[in-house]
Each structure stands twice: as structure tokens, then as C-alpha cells.
Image (cartoon, rainbow, N blue to C red; front, side, top):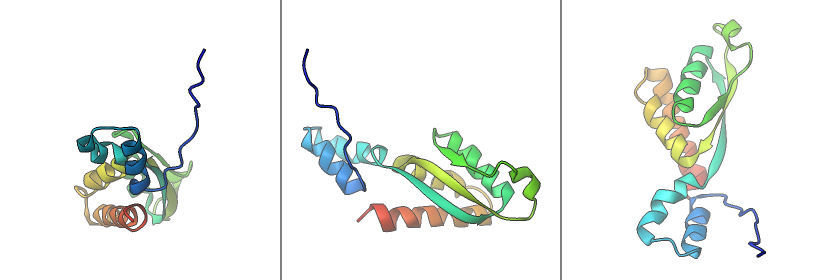
Length: 123
């Protein structure tokens, strides 16, 4: 029986992901494709209207991610809430693209998601 030395790899951003993928000898042309799938992040949004939270959750679920919303979201009506968007960087980019097809308030959230990715993961 061999020891495969299983361990967690700390990947904080896309550069870490690229470095790890390259370190095991992957084809150079596949590094940029795989790196966004190797970084999992959670984005918290505040002051989201309930109807927007539900749209964001549905769109993220459709691409394999998750969004945590308050259990009483349907009772909030015009009150805002906080939500947690959970997924890989690739899923977050895909979500931003889907949200950009909705109405202005959702498009603004799309832009904010892209901004947080670029500010915190592309360094």
C-alpha cells in the first residue's frame, strides 16, 4: 500500500491556483481554464431586496453554486436583507453574466460582483 500524502492546498487567489496547477505539469494552455475553478469564494451582499435575492439564488443554483438567503425572505417585502453567494471564481463570473441580463438593480449587483473579484482575486 502506498502513501499518497493527501493534503489541503491553500489557494487564496488565481495566481496561487495557476502556480499549483503549473507545479504538477499541466499543459500550459489549460492553466487559465482550470484556475478559476480552483478558487472557491463567498461574497456577502447587504441591502438586497428580497425579490433580487431570489433571482440571484435561482441564477446561481442554475450554474451549480449556492446562495444563502434569510428563511423569512418572502415575508420581508420591501425590507432589504443580506445574502451569501457561494461558488468558484468561474461560477461567480458566470453569475455576473447572467445577472447582467436582468433589470438595472440586478445589473448593478453584477457589476459589484465583478469588481470584488477583480480587487481581491486578480492580484
